[in-house]
Image (cartoon, rainbow, N blue to C red; front, side):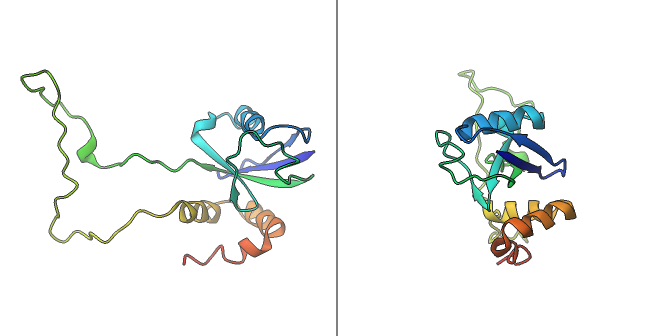
Length: 152
């Protein structure tokens, strides 16, 4: 079957694969063609995250000309400067102390701010896609595309 693969950077490419290909094998093929390790991206079809690696494409409902969207894997590590190591002197036991400043409230800081959900990250990534990718997304999944501009 012929599949269209659309990375978030806009370099769309096609893959010809048999229907009995496992999703894990598909991700490996995408990784080879895309030039990035499998751990750095997630794959989606019809707005759903594909995670079951032992399912064949046919069993997962794939058909000819289906669109697969590749998105960067959301980071799960905090990106706060407090977590970076900077010339920290070790204590008497030779162990570097780890201090957690996350509970300290700073004056004027918005403490109600929560990180965006994975769905919101995917929505934002799709909105940054080239118009051709968004158009293809609207054709393949009109119901999901109708709420693409709705952040709520």
